[in-house]
Image (cartoon, rainbow, N blue to C red):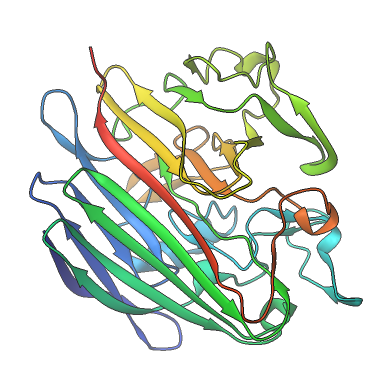
Amino acid sequence: MNVLTESFGTIPDGREAKLYTLTNNSGLRVKVTNYGAIITSIEVPDKSGTFENIALGFDRLEDYSSEAYLGNYPYFGSIIGRFGNRIAKGHLEIEGKSYQLAVNNGPNHLHGGSIGFDRRLWNAAIIEKDDAAGVELSYLSPHLEENYPGNMQVKCVYLLTEAGELVIEYFAETDQTTVINLTNHTYFNLTGGREDILNHELMLHANKMTEMTGQIPTGSIISTIETVYDFSDFKTFRQDLDKLDRGYDDNFILDNENGSLKHAGILREKSSGRQIEIFTTQPGMQLYTGYWIPELTINGERKFGSYSGVALETQHYPDSVHHPHFPTTLLLPGKIYNEKTIYRFSLISE
């Protein structure tokens, strides 16, 4: 197990970003930059032993800040915060005080605002163990950054294990009551990008979802059984695509409100033989099949576009701040926020 550190370029204010390459003894390789705490690539073998990158991302820092990319921003591989997903109308009320957050997704607040954790430079410390290698990223989000109350100290730990698992663990503390909903926004494509993700198969341990209107929960919890949102058995994303306007972008309920580490589901792709098992302490998962991913020209090559990757965003429910019966996203002084998600990479059992 080892971690290689190298320069990844400079951000606009002149500070240097680093790229950390985590490698286990089986050859699995995960690359992470402290700019946005972004996972830039995940290299795993297919059934013939060929290693390929299965995560959407870039080899150059400048591509993450290009106008073409940010113009229809898909948040490749980044940590989302302070609040992942949407807050209706950007309105936040905490302990009787109102805060108006940025409205950056139609009429709503999305993924932490105009400049969220995904575009901040994090501090980094290397982790090397006999059975794991990783990087600990930390960031101090000051009081009223993006108009969220409280000075919040955030830590994100990425660990690649000998067992073929990528462990993502979050910690946070605040000096004022605030809200937090962290997630990672990696998009997976188990074909290594040769095809879109519509023939990928997904199974989820979820038979309920939050009912949505305009991407905002109504507050009702509804069944997914025998609907287009039913992933209780493996099915491809293509199977019900003609019944959906823009694919999937929905919050599934994992019945995990006590925060135990739960097996949430499996993503697999038969031509490559690759699969990912997902474990999480989070109560929900936003399934997004990437309709709005932009097509980009990278080094003269056309890449990405609609359905080029699927995001499995383990998190609390969207707009939880307006639905007291949802699992709480409040964080109080003296309390520690702690959530964990594990992606286990392997081959489909025949």
